[in-house]
Image (cartoon, rainbow, N blue to C red; front, side, top):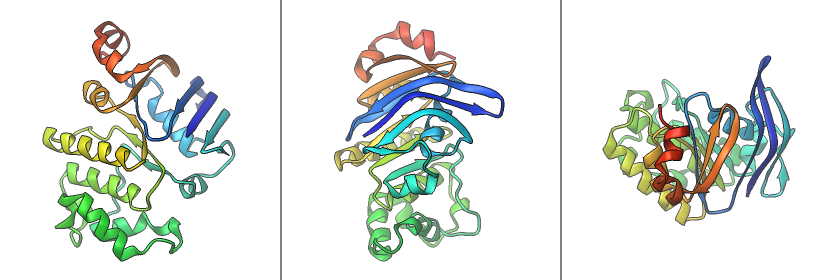
Amino acid sequence: MLETKDLNAWYGASHTLHGVSISVAQGEIVALVGRNGAGKTTTIRSVMGLMSKTTGSMTFNGNDLTSMPAHDRFRLGLAYVPEERRIIPGLTVRENLQLGLVASRGKIDEREAIEEIAESFPRLKERLDQEGVTMSGGEQQMLAIARATIAKPKMILLDEPSEGIMPVLVEEMGVLFRKLRDQGVTLLLVEQNVEWALRLADRAVIMDQGEVVYESSSAALLADKEIQERYCAV
């Protein structure tokens, strides 16, 4: 479904990704792990079209993403949940969800979509008329994920979804991600909580200093404490 080949990226003059090649098959959950500064966030920002300078190739469902703007990538079915959530101040939960439907251009019934997403996110169902930024951090993360999924994307890129979230909500999030996968949604997950990510994902990719250094099944990496210590330990 998603493939990058020899992907390079820069922040200004700083060359941060060095020939990153990864692939994600339809219906997989893939965990992208590694230490802070390894290039994980830069990789998914590049895939989403949010880096000002990249080289190499990126394809999604057979579509060449290389020179495509971010909003067109979204319309292809590629959604993104950033680390900082970006819940819009002054807007209710319902209104934040409505933003997720803008790019559908009226092809999705708004009322039905919000009712359906509220059933999938019970913590949001009771808060549809509450201002989004007044909720807890975990509830805001759920809202960010719901906003990304309401337009029924084919794939979601998630950046550190468990960061700063209570353990009970992290586990709820894991149940939700498995449910999305079972519904055919593909997930690429950047995560510092390595053990949780590996228990959740089908495959794992480790990055270090802007390069892919290791790939395996998640179960194999979960059992390999030496590799985890070498590339993921703080």
